[in-house]
Length: 603
Image (cartoon, rainbow, N blue to C red; front, side, top):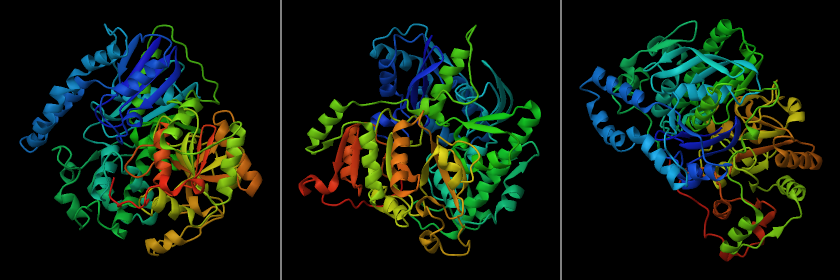
């Protein structure tokens, strides 16, 4: 059976294709439209996924139930009337024009791709899709399942259990009580954009102290031993739909909400650390309760909160489960995949096999791929001279040599990643040993805030020598301590802490001595593994910086032409596109923009 899964209209729209239970293709719409977190119906992603199919789809499954979601919005509006009417009236036209007509738009997309659309559109519930995306691709034959996000139809968290092809959701937390919305409230209050800036808040947290933890637990929520909670809604504004927090929330912390262009102060660092600690406590309590209920040894995670890799790392170290697996596209994009998998395994006779070792995500390399002919045409269209190397091994060696010499290299190799993390297919690589590299990448290439940390990528077989990590982390979703690292003084100014050298790999060691780690094995990620092996042979260090190939405010590159423009308009030194190598120092100056300086504006 051939199944197309869809997510759309909230953030990170995507499409995914599953054939007889095998994940064939998956991509976010933003990679085609170049609109970051694009929420539009994924016409481009649908067309691309169907082009990879072996025939027409037997079913198309949307990742939630729009009528139930609309019912929740109506009930909420009436419950807080008349305060929420303005926000509801502003949202209503979008529902009338688009969100209530998803079956018709899906049928139109199928016909545009040349396929019959009769009686093929189905719906999964939002957290059913998240749970399916977590369990079914995992390596575990049996596992507990925990999903956490803002809100789907009504659920904001679910606790479940999977065994073979069977997946059951056992308990739920319901709107308006939501860990995702609580974290987003602090994201908004600290001046970052909801549904995209939560990872900035997580990165800011180590600069602070949790001095507001007790105040949050006392005033903002009633937390129970099993991890369930009720928010004290008088401090929040999202029921009215206009903003996440209100004046009472601001009064609690004795400061107005930070505006995006304002300076980040110690107050914001302390708020970030406080809500991070509270989030970790809630996740740990839920996990312990789920373990008591199921007795499972393994845990699978999905939903936007599962992208909180600091909480994931703590859960792995302190939680009751022996093993942890997180869906790499844990947010709404992964809901498209989960919807397709849920439908497949709901069919009579569906059989699932899991060997306990390898997952079914194929390294998350599920997006578009471009051959050397396409790359050559893109280079020629821009007038760029390039050297063609004989094979992938030669490209890997050249990347390693250039990084060892202090260069920053943009990489486009193979199929694009599915999910928010660059894993080596659409990456920027640098030397983790360089004390200056974090600043260089943030200010001259990524054009983003200086406090933002970078992730190390390390040979899986050498990871334990450099990080206190007891499990593989192929999808960059676990934070762990760097061996031998020292954290900086919590009382030192942020600028001073940024300049401190905290370990032998300072460019990837955060201020608390931790790192968000990607481990690389040769089976799932052969190119990046070869790069790291070559770098290790040259330097004695199997660790590099790996960050996504994009600049602030843009999604990661997908097509070679986007990689070329990103290379030319930033401070990157070299570019590895398929078999081709471009050295910036060898280019005619007329091919380069007059400046790579950008206005530093919030994304």
